[in-house]
Structure formats: structure tokens, C-alpha cells
Length: 406
Image 1 (cartoon, rainbow, N blue to C red):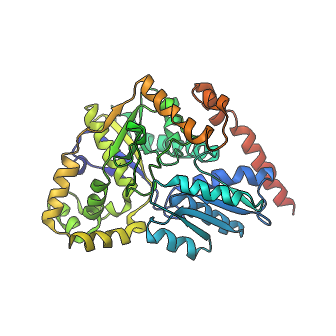
Image 2 (cartoon, one colour):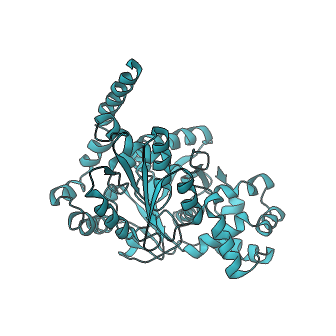
Image 3 (tube, rainbow, N blue to C red):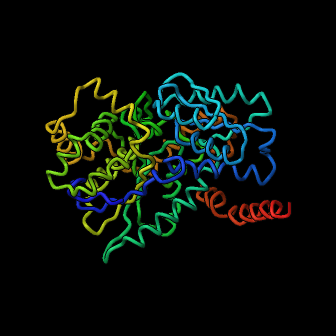
């Protein structure tokens, strides 16, 4: 889905891969598959005796619950209690056991505490997206390849792939940027996060409302050295655009003011974190003064379907949405979006962010001092993403052949 200049306010082309059409309505179902399959084919997860535990802030645990439903095995979802009502309803409808931990989107420490509690029971197998390389491995090869194919399909004469934007979250999706950099070396990777929880930008912390991103720590699987830019987005901007893109008054205003009706009707494909990625793309385009030949690709992770209760909450809080408010939101957020709270990372900025991993993963989660040093070297990530592919494919083929013999 391409966001035209009439809406973005920038000359650069912004293209988003839409997650709505995955079975769960979000592309994280693939990341869950990437974490589960290596355990299935190596025998460390047995659907007949194990329960798969999916720690998440929403979409990953829904993906895991879906995968478990296909296997007819129990799924356990752990997510913060303040996530959207739709997430909890969906999980219960598919039959997952749900643990709601204290806090909001950024309260991942409480999720880890629950995982530690469950780990004492050997029937629970924890599939932690924040340190499982199956998550980033899937996005590197699948999402990365998909973006390259979309760019080849939509590329116009003179176009260049200039940027890839992804909210950090578990650092799965952003690994697609590592794949893209291999093929487009001049492209820049932009990691977006909530301004209310600016961990990458300024070692910050705090609660926020952009569900699915920004968890007050640096995921173990994030190749920080390969990230070029950090963009912090205000959650209020995302909530206001959610209303603009979904309320009848907002859509009517857009249609009367230069936005084609067919595009306006598709804006519901952008959930809250998708809007965050859109705004980070706009910041990036303005900062680097990109023009019509520059293409920025991002991911529209999920749609507004998961956030109807949030729209109702906004109406209860602020009143009915009007075309006057729509005009204000379009001009003040989209058209006037600046590159404040954007940092082009130096070598030492990257090292500072990477070093934050120590406090979560080495001190608290049992990772080794030696491995965090190894993660700073590019060879570590080549080994992780490239050298294990054939081995995993072979294991999957052998596993599938066993099923064919039964």
C-alpha cells in the first residue's frame, strides 16, 4: 500500500507491507512460526506433552496461539493487562490460556517474571520473541525478501530503495532491514519507538499507548550496529491519526480535500503501530530531504480491527470526532511532522544502545558476557542469519518426510 504525497506531505514514496491479511490479522504469526518450527523439528517441543508459552504485547502471542491451534496443542499467552480488549477476546476465542500481567505496553519485565515462574514446570516451553532468533530469522529471510520483491515490482525509473522503517518491539521485523542492506548497501534502517518510552533515543523509559512496540529494554536479537536512525513518535499523534483514518468525519474530510476515496477507505489497514511507522517514515524523508526518486518501505503490522475499543475510548474522552478536528490533525501531525526526536546514529550512539543489553540479558536473563561482546561483531549476525539456513531447511524436509511415511 503506497501512501501518496497528498497525505504524507513529503516527496518520497512511502510503501507499507500490509499485515491485515495474515490469518491472525497481523504478520507476527510468521515470527511465531519461526520460533516454533526449529523446536518441532529438533524434538525439543512435543505437541502431545508440552504447552507453548508466548510472552508478548499482543500480536506475537496471537500468532503463537494460531499456530498451536493448527497443531491441536495448548497455547499460553502472557501479555500486559492494559492491552486492547480485542486482543484478549481473540485469544480466549481461539482457546488460549491467558495470563494478564501488571502494566501497559512497556511493562515487559513483568512478563519475564511470569515466564520465570512457569519455567519451573517442564511441561511449559517458553518461546520468548525477545531472545529467540527464530523471530528475527523469519523476518530476515521472509519479510526481507518480500520487501525486495515489492520494491522490484513497484520501482519506477530512477527510484532507489533509500530507507526501511520498523518499530523496534521485539526486534524481529527490523531484521528485514539487515537482509535489505545486504542487497541495497546505501539504504538506511530507521528504528521507531514511542517518545513516551525513548529507550534507544535517550536510555529512557515509561508507559505509552503504541501497542506492540517499545518495551523499556533492547531485545537480545536486535543487530544494533546495523541500525542507522532512531525516531521517537508521540503516542498522542498516533491516537489522533487513528481517529482521522477511521472516523466517518475524518474520512469525509480527507475525501473532500485531495485524498482519493479508494485510498481513504483503505486507511483502516493501519493500526496504531502502523501509524507510528508511517510518521517515522515522514520524519526520515524530511530529515534526509528525500525526493521523488527515494523509496521508503515500512510494515503496516496490523489494522484498526484490533483497536475499535480504543476508538470508543477516545470518543468517550474527547467527544465526537468532527471535520474541524480532522483538519487540525491532518495539518498538525501529517503535514507539519518534523524531524524532531530523530537521531542519526554515530558509532558511539550504536555502542551506547548495544551496551544497554547487558543490564537486561546478562545481569537478569542468564546470557553470557562473552556473547554480548560477540554480538557487536558483524560476523555474529552473518552466522546467525546466513549460515544456519540450509541446516534448518534440511531438518524441516526430513521432519516432513517422516510424516509422509506414516
